Each structure stands twice: as structure tokens, then as C-alpha cells.
Length: 491
Image (cartoon, rainbow, N blue to C red; front, side, top):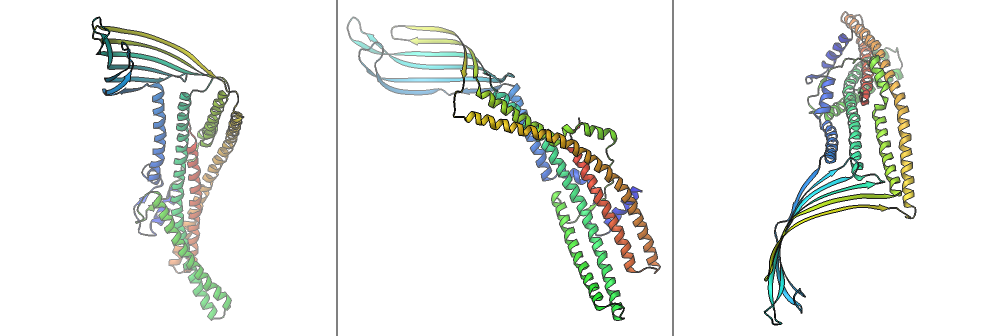
């Protein structure tokens, strides 16, 4: 029975005008979510949040490596100063060549600290003045000396915050929460966009029916006005009744213009939403009634109300507020940083003097361990005010989460009940459409035999169209409620 009625509705809709090929509601939804500008924007925003979290996650577990260096630098300077071996200052012109660089690896640690491993090199050629006594005399002769540095080093350094929230972990958690929120917003936006598509789809179907109804009512009012004119001429009705009949015909004519304008508006809204050309207007197929959630799915939906979009968002916001509160509290107490470093150096230093030369191998090892502590004493009450603000923000988010839990349970019960009621109503409305269609066919047969008037036939047709409109309105609500269930993230 349901399939026969749906086919009848499709044929009737398709017969009203020369339209494009028929499309289904599922085709519209698929295009809306995947191929339209808004659908791609929603998907793109979701992907961006995932990429940002992946980048933060990679940065958390995989080291950051960089290479830094300078090209050989040439420097020439003149300096008037006192140098070793000279009794008085001299003017010395110096030429130096140097180059340095390093490869640095920085790794975030799960404790919230960071580990840095750095290797570097230092290459320098430095000139310096040397005063050399000539023979046994008191005359000092100016000579040039040269020092060559060829050194490499390795530094291992670890920093760990103490008694406070790590900025590294905070950044990671923030990126994770942003991704979770974006995931929820993606579900919400997709569901809402889907509901927009459902609304536009059914509004266009209903507007088409309204136009047909308005046209039939206009014709019916015209027949009534013609008949009342005859009755007025014969003195059966008063002039006032005749004028009211003519006025009614004009009102129905104006109502038809409004219905046609509404149909064009709904068609433009539909095509604009789907990024489709406005001409030709698409033919829409009346969708079948989807199956309602069975008992197993209904129980799963009720059991997973915590996974509803509103509740999940409230939970994440509460977690963020709690983390901010802990961070603020930690800043009021003792703060500290543990820093440990170990470095080794290898290389050689060659020095050439006028009177001697040497080449030394350099082998150095350095250790450093330090703990830096700080404790705020007084800041005019700004810290306490900030703490109080964070406490209020956390308490507000906690209450919002509890409210979302309660309302989520209640809303799910109402939503499932509404779906069940609309499913039952659709069964009755299908029967009503079937009876109205049967009555219309019988009226068409009697009209063909001349047993009823044009006005009576139009009344039966209007009754049939109104029944179809009621069916479409309920079916629209059924689809909208079903789309709302998609905001639940079932495991």
C-alpha cells in the first residue's frame, strides 16, 4: 500500500510541469554533504583540526631536528690597545675568518619537559700581535701570531618544570581538545546541513502542492462566482452575497500568485543550497518512510546519551576549565625548573708565534645540574582574583555539563517518542491519502458521466491534495528527527 501511494504522489508531482530528471532525497543529501561548497567547508574544517592535532602529536613523540650554520665570515678591524709584550699601546690591524654551526634535536618528554641534543662546530683563524725583543737590546719588534681553532662539541640538556603544569603538555592537550571539539562540531554541522537539505526538499514538494491547491481553489471560486451571478440575476441571492462571491474569486486568484511566488522562492533556495542551476527546476521524488529505530538501537541511544554532541562539548569544556584552574593554582605556589646538562668538546687549537708553535688536542667535559625555584609573595591580589575567576569558570562549566546530562536524557526520550508517534501517524495518513485518491478517482468517473459539477470535482481534488500535504509535513518531521539522532556518537 505504501509503495503504491508513493508512486502515485511522484507521478502527480511530475505531471504538474515540464521539469528535469527526478532526484531522490538521498541523492540530495549525498550531494549536499560531499559536493557542495558548504559541505566541503565543513569537511575541510574537520580535516584542518585533525591535521593540527597530528602535527602536535608528531611534535610530541618525534624529535624536532634543525641545522643552523653561518657561512665563513671575514672580518678586518683596527684596534689601538695594549698587548702582551708591549710597554705602550700600539695600533694593530687584525684580520679574522670564522664559521660556526650546529645540528639541534629537541624532543618533548612525556613528563612535560624537553630534551635537547646539539652538536656544533667552531672554526676560527685569529691574528694577534706579538712583541719580540731583538737580541739583548731593549728594542721590541712587532710580529704577527696566528691561532687556528678547529673544535666540535656535543651538548645534552634536559629541562623539567616542577610543581607546575608543563607548557608542552598543555599545548598537546589543547590540540587534542580542539580536535575532539572539531569532531563534535563536524557531526553537528553535518546533521544540521542535512536537516537544511531535508527542509528545503520537503518545502519544495509542499510548495508545489500549495500551488496546485491554490490553482484548484481559484477555479472553484471562479465556478462559484459564475453560478452566484446566475443566481443573482434570477433574484435567488442578494447583491451582497454576489459581491462576496466575486471578492472570494479575486482573493483566490491573488492567493495563487502568492503560491507561485513561494514555489519559485523554495525552488531557488533548494538549488542555491545544492549549488545547482536554477533552470530547469528538478523533479523530486517523494521519499519512502525510513525504518524507525528498533528496540536494540533505541536502548543503545539511551545508554549513550553521554555521547550526544551537546553533552560531549560540555564535558570537554569542563575538562579545559579544570585544567586551566589547576594551572592557575600551580602558579600561586612554589614553581621550579630542573635543568641538567652534559657537554663534551673535541678538537685542536694550533698557534703559530714568531718564536714558537704548538698544536694542542682539546678534550673537555662539562656537567651542570641546577634547580631554580620561585615563590610569588605579593602582586596586589591580581593572582587571587584570577584564581577566583578560574574557579567560577570551572564551576559554571561543571554545572553546564550536569545540565547537559539531564537534558540529554530527557531530550532523547522525547525524540524517540516523537519518531514513534510520527511513524504511527504516517501509517494512518497513508490510508487517508489512499482513501482520498480513491474518492477522487470515483469523482472523476462521475464527472465524466455528467453526474457531478466541476466545483464538486475540484473539492475532491483539493481534499486529496490536502491529505498529501499532511502526509508530507509529517514525513518531513520524521526525517528531521531521524537526522537529529546522528548527533549521537554510537560506539
